[in-house]
Image: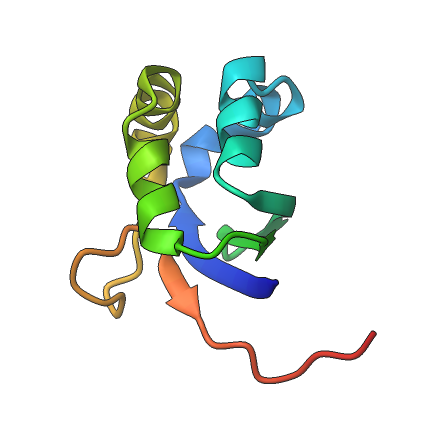
Length: 109
């Protein structure tokens, strides 16, 4: 299992709608997340900076393949079309990233 975290910024005028959408995530999107070996997925919001921090545990063996599977999901693509315009990627993210991946520097159980 690998713990993963990502961060980006949420546009200030979209916070209420983003929260509303995530109170009622589409079942097909949740199923795709599970099918892609992602567990314990959480998203946190830090205001007033409007930083979104996503955390999950990856239980698969081929993250790239699972992300291709997620990308192929029509429901997930529609979800991203709605949520994506509400988000602002960090200017320091790596090429090809939307959410900037973070390095885990500490863990205790």
